Image: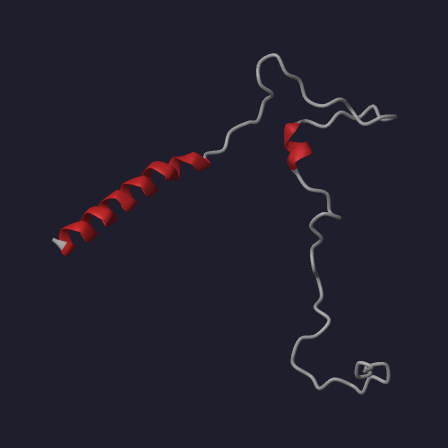
Length: 86
């Protein structure tokens, strides 16, 4: 009885994963019928399309080129690292 329950759960889980796997398809984004894209930014003649509006600016997701530390190192003595006052 317990084995049949586990098998049924696995079958249902597998089928639901297959059903959801098609939800991530990509296609060209277009506004809904009767709707338009947002207006161009004030004072600019450049009007971005849907793909350009969805791409985050560099400030939102900066790329890290160099890590400050590449290995573990002992910390130098910090004269401002004081214990809390009572």
